[in-house]
Image (cartoon, rainbow, N blue to C red; front, side):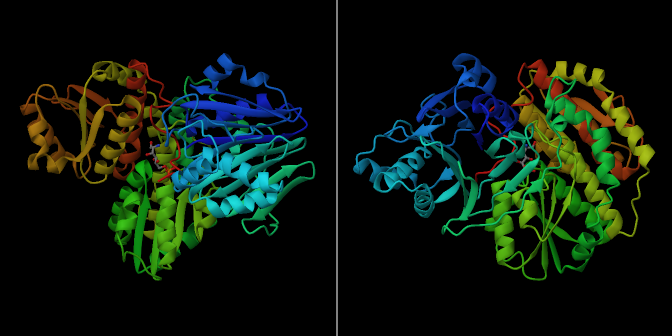
Length: 586
Ligand code: AGP
């Protein structure tokens, strides 16, 4: 996923575009570029690297003009090169475009454009947008018409913004987020509110099949058929400070530490829609949970909790697998979609499929203005503030906490956690950094690591493994401890490291037997538990707590371990290679 930003107004565009791209860099960070207009001339500067580096080497911030566009790339089509970086231009260089998404029919469009004499400079799918617009405007210089025509031609998912040498800016959205920011001295267009949060909290969220035109007459929004659309201006809840690192070296560490507040907020959420949400779940003939990555791991925990404490049996389906699971839903069913960003393409497709079978759509989301929140029948916010670090940390535990809250209501208050107990326990695990940094030193060069747990600890084992994969680039596997003797035990020898999630709840004694079996094969074991054991080579102590709270208390040390091990391997925990924060393409 890439990030797009544009500005048209009275101020010099480039410095604001560069700052906006820095805030959205978590969306994609392999190359950067800007295009600005001054004296009816489009100047383009772009290069491989992160915003800071390219800005320094090319002086992006110094580009003139009060109209401009910018982009950070996460390559899908064409390698990571200066030429493939955005913006891209048409042959006459009087148009420049930036694009997020995938144009599925780009090669046939490209072929027909080349047949009509167009010369392509990059290997990207995106460049066809610039040439197509040029082609339409060549016939008749009517930007609105050109936008109507191009949206008829393009197939795939896209949010693109084009700038024309007459100073006009135009942007369109189909299955990729695009937002207009309204400030007192001009307009922004961006993939994410963070792109312009420094300048305004007034935004218009474009829906699918809509485009916007910014020119001297201000802004106008149209449907793809050209009919004008009146849109509501939304006040953004997030503050700029929420998107700053503050005293922390990395967003990931800041967000891990914010959990002492974010978990409590979600666990004791007073959301007015909670009861209605629970009534819909309780009244459904069938409940299916879905999500991707960490959000799917939260769905696995919800499945166990709803069944164990509320007697509601449900399925948990990975969003990217949803399209292959036919006949899952009907009008008496409910889909609970879980997502931090609310923009994950696989999940939005699962929601589309569920809507087609008339199921009700409930969602648990962090971004209240996201596509998921806006397309759901009812959504609950986890309200943990913007999460910038690519690895989900505070959003995962806030999802769990809200799922506990829902389970508590569905079960007639069977859980009822005690606020001060929870606060104390979280404080303790967040302070165990010294021990965890020592363990990180020991494991920093291992090639494989296995995380084992039973019951609710199994999905946490998968989540912990995901953090190590994302931040440490190590082969990490989450396994149900009970499966050990059915195969994985063969992997255990003196070169193997295992993290055992083993607090003293109903799973304790069986899991401890597994520790003995693993130690008998010479492997080293890191125990995560409130009880130490002489079988552990390293012990990560978590406080004694209500059984229900152990998944939250044991995942935080796993987040910290991944963070500190990444530092030991000198990789940047905020921007892991090849990944991006919200996966808006399938
Ligand atoms: C988790 O650390 C990853 N960032 C990723 O797996 C993420 O959970 C997944 O892409 C789902 O994102 P979402 O919650 O924004 O839908």
